Image (cartoon, rainbow, N blue to C red; front, side, top):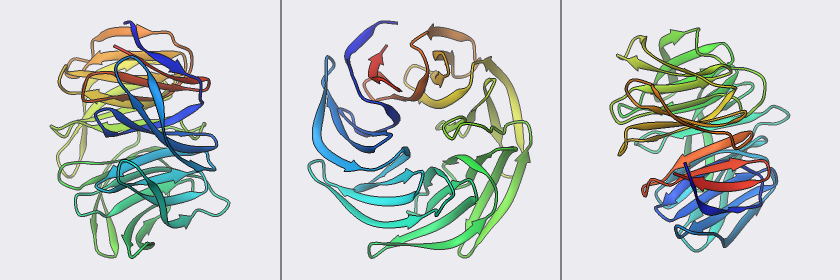
Amino acid sequence: MKKILTLIAISAIAISAVEASQLAMGKNDGFGDFTHDGANYAFAGNWAGSGPVLDIAVVSGGMHVIRSTGLTYYSYDGTTLTAGGSYGWGADTARAVGVASDGTVFAGGSTGFGAFNYSAGAYSVDAWFANDTYSIGVDGNDHIHVQQSDGLSGWTHAPGALNLTAWDGGWGTSGSDILGALEIDSGGTLHVGKSDGLGSLTYNGSAYAFTGGWSAGAGITDISIDETSGQVWAAQGDGVQVVDQSSYALLAYGGFGSINAVLVDSDGNAHLGKSDGMLSVD
């Protein structure tokens, strides 16, 4: 591994790609947009204060942003960031957000997760299930996968209802609000991180099956998949590891300290968010 972008000294918790050279980055006191040119990061000028921002789901024309206090939509045209409607979590902790192909928003936290419609500048709750949610992923068939404190659950959504399709109690996480991770590759395989490592599972619509792929790690906080190179990047408590997407053979490890977030962009640059800044490696 080698560092290819200079470190920017900000506390990064969540990173999402807006486009190839533009990132939405969340931290303890808000989030904003940053560009990178292969050598440096630069603040693009948009900032929305208050946090911590724990997850960001980018959609066409904007993004759904999870703070610990709730969910907010921001429109974004590449130049201007404008706040829209919000949904508060009250005294509880919101942690994760994902979006289906029809625009339905799935968001969750310490009291459960729900399906939300966003229209005319406002969120409305369509369905709700009480659990302790840490991560949310939506696959290519619009099935929802939820990493809970006590396991992994699969769901379908119909207007007014969330229907449980699968359960595996071996893939839960608990503790820190940023511990745990779930990403789904283009083939539908789930890559799940928890307190002691990361592994992969298949899903057939009614059950999960462990593929046998596993790599130990010290508290997985985020996962990003680089399908061009067939690699899975995992942020963890003492650095970042890279494993083969199929075999889970360890390809590389970098001891960069505690990493909160990782994103591999379309150019193959991996952006790492940590408490004292954001850097990129390859």
